[in-house]
Length: 159
Image (tube, rainbow, N blue to C red; front, side, top):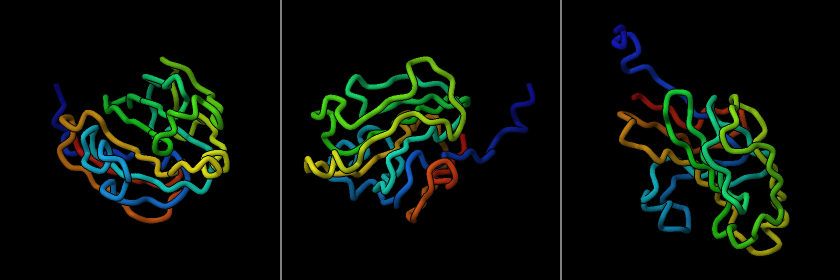
């Protein structure tokens, strides 16, 4: 009834991993660089802790532990994909702390990744953080700078 009070309210998505954000166009994987799966940013991580970027529910933990889908409390679907082609590791280097349908708060630990394992095996560390249901978004703003997991806003949006 009073939805007009919430119109154009800015919402925030926080960095799920510490590092430096870059534009998705710089990710060496067309599914991300051409925004086939959605829009957002990528982070080149310098730390292995992956935190929830929003309050919400874990929708999926990919079997190989390299990707996580979260539905925010306002219905946004966010994909965190750690590294490029890291599915081939079959979970090696990843330790998961959440499960499907688990409620999470911004900053809750989702997983830890041993970045040295990924580097030593030659994997690219680019970590896309994308909104997969962009039809829900009116305006999306992203940043390109150093970020701290759970503390730096990497995207703002209006619904």
